Image 1 (tube, rainbow, N blue to C red):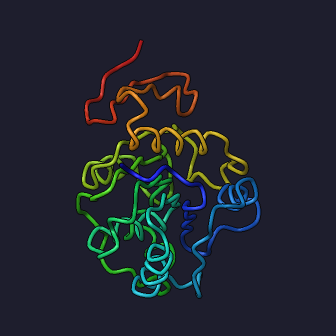
Image 2: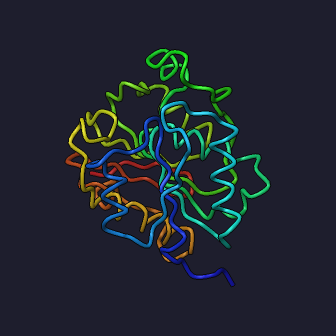
Image 3: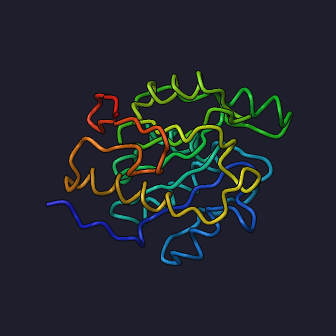
Amino acid sequence: MARPYSSTDTLIVPGLNGSPVGHWQQVWLEDRPESTLVEQDDWNHPDLDSWKARLEQHLSRSEGAWIVAHSMGCLLTAQMADSPLRHRIRGALLVAPCDLKTAENQHPDVIRFGAMPCKHLPFPTLMIGSQNDPYMGEDVLERTAACWGSRLVNLGAVGHINPQSGFGRWPQGYTLLSHLQAYVEGRLASRVLDTDFVGAPAPQAIDLNGTTVGAS
């Protein structure tokens, strides 16, 4: 029998420059202090090898962890697909993943993150994106979700889902993670409305098993 979910095994994984005060990930840590920040030695110069090693350190101390990642933290999480500790990841909430080439163009000479990962992930993921993210166009968002095997929820025109686009405390994020956890643990029917996740004005039903259907 699977070990019941424990919130102490929730790892918060930021991206480039970390998550500053006011960022929803920092508020998440305040609201849920049992969650753990995966702290990097150098937030301003992402290095795949060192960042991945730090995440693996956290996973090595857990029987099973949930990941809540943002931006380049999503790419780091995707890079865990070939990690010997990938089985320790019970599921991941991937919020506003960035396109690596776009990030490198916007921040030249600071990112050493290899190639954009494009491999089906061996753990369940729910990807949250937007229509106008400056770090990942909507078409790339959809392709990335398909490549990683992620269920995708598009929040609309909400930018990079960070403080600049109005995301401080983000209660919907807690709901999204709870739905993912319940689905993974078999407590949630596979068909869930986007309105259950985000309260979208134009809901579309999604099937976490892989079938997308419309909602009237």
